[in-house]
Amino acid sequence: MKIHEYQAKEIFAKHGIQVPPGEVVTNAEDARVVAERIGKPVMVKSQVHVGGRGKAGGIKYCENADVAYQNAKSILGMDIKGLTVKKVLITEAVNITSESYVGIIIDRAAKKPVFMVSPAGGIDIEQVAAETPEKIFKRHIDPLLGMSMYEARGLAYKLYDDPKLVNQAAKIIMQLYDVFMSNDCSLAEINPLITTPEGKVWAIDAKINIDDNGLFRHKEIEALRDMDAEEKSEMDARDAGLSFVKLDGNIGCIVNGAGLAMATMDLVKYYGGQPANFLDIGGSSNPEKVVSAMQIILRDPNVKAILFNIFGGITRCDDVANGIVEAINRMKPSVPIVVRLTGTNEDEAREILKSTNLPAATTMDGVVKKAIEIAGIN
Ligand code: GDP
Ligand code: MN
Image (cartoon, protein in one colour):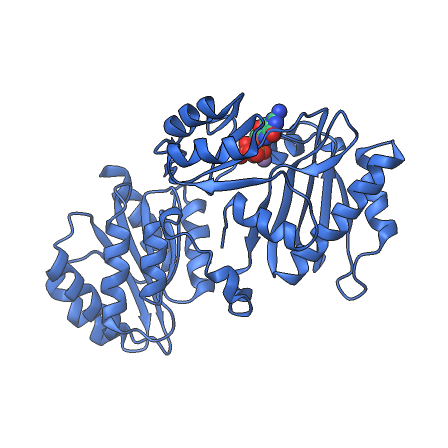
């Protein structure tokens, strides 16, 4: 789960990481009021769940409260990478002498959190990794031992030479580790961590992603979920009990089991296609779930073919087939559907699907190739 910068900054503050004072508002009048209260130049910062807001024009420096009003007016309602800006953070503008990057994620292969720091901050870390990987420094942290000050200082020395800056940065790195661990984060990032002409180090941006599987332990974070900012189809899928992730391709995939869903997507890619989504209808195959899955997938205008890949175990193929028939009757989709059903009750399923005249396949390769072919024609 993603949260907004202003929410991440509140969590930072709870763990002792200082951030410039500010307040979030939803209209330009309030932006003026907050800017007047701050009484110094401010930044107007769009609150949307994407990076690179600065480059997209969603972050503006404002000399005074009038300019803050104007900028808030133009940024609110703006479209940034497909998301509409509904909130802006009004925060004190600070003078910057350097921008660096500090982030922590889980390294699955190492089964440990890993810190990444870079003196080349402010820009996308993906870009730094691609162009100047020698400017990124990593350090794994043993979660059982926790983080030690010497480790944090080692990282901080990759950013600064001046011990006064190193001391401040090391403290922030320790606190960021604390944020990461105590909130079950999958990512905690400060980009940029800045220095000021007065020699102060602080976080002016904050990004936190929470591991969905840890959310039940953090009701206060679950409450921060911003319905406006999430992919609508993903929310509907969650309500329907489906595991669903929207992707950018044109082949809608409906599969049972996460492993088979991943394998199906791999195969789509292998044969040169692009999946439009990951979707796992789960173990029990209530026909209603199939209908919900079709509804969610058909809402995506990119989808040119729907691919069913069902391996019947606990899931019964006849249930899925009934769901397909039901969905077709209700929605009369114009998008073609290809089906592979094998396993429990597959003969019954084939009998049920006879009336639909859907192209059926028995092998996984066969159905994937068929779907790609059809998507290419449509
Ligand atoms: P992002 O583009 O979504 O990552 O948003 P950031 O909060 O990181 O802001 C992008 C850039 O705007 C930063 O790298 C800074 O260069 C600039 N910026 C943000 N806040 C301030 C500020 O208070 N003062 C100044 N001078 N620049 C800022
Ligand atoms: Mn940033």
